[in-house]
Image (tube, rainbow, N blue to C red; front, side):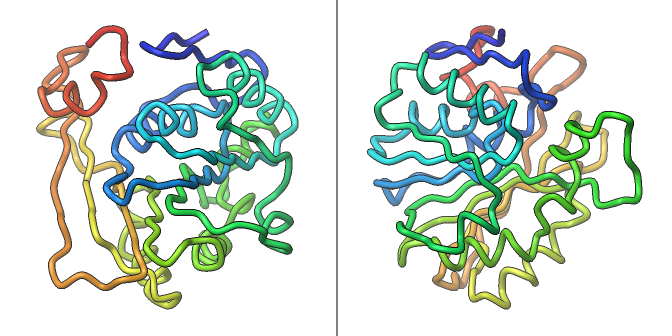
Amino acid sequence: MFKFKQFSIQQDKTAMKVGTDGVLLGAWAPIANNPFSVLDIGAGTGIIALMLAQRTHAEQIDALEIDEDAYEQAVENFESSPWGDRLFCYHAGLDEFIEEPEDEYDLIVSNPPFYSEDYKTENEQRDLARFQDAMPFEELVEAADLLLSENGIFALILPYKEEQSFIALARESELYPLKITRVKGTPTSSIKRSLLAFSRNEKAEIEIDQLVIEIERHNYTPEYIELTKDFYLKF
């Protein structure tokens, strides 16, 4: 079990455990538009949806998870949280979910599978959670375009090397970057991740910054502590 300040995550059934990527996105996703409805695509343990339940007053927080064990785990984590009445998980793939869209969402988030290289492990469940062929970026952008409300925000975390191609792909659907945060593990390491937020309105000035997680092993930067202090017990 992984304990946060206001909720806990059981993760014994799912291949994808609580990781920095999910926590970063859950803490970083812009909520200045006061979302009424939120969708988490590829929920895993449900951590990002739970973080957004804590951060927002959204009355409808839906999550989508294709893997049966992860789906069951997310439901369990939702039900044992203080916000069970606002959280709902669908057991479905994204393609299935967008066939008959019923709702628009003010905030759509995703920590998508992203190892698109021809590399598979022996663990099929983990591969499904990690590999882009389970949820191609094209499908993700198509879903965001279809499901995002007029003033909605679409936020996700990607490998830095995928940043430019994803921005170009989103632009084809008239989704434009409004905020980009590039993440490094330490001050001397290379940029590993990009946190991206998109909207339907093209901004003249995109907010771009950088986040360093640790000064050295287990010595966290003030910026990372500030971002995650409402969640991690250690901060």
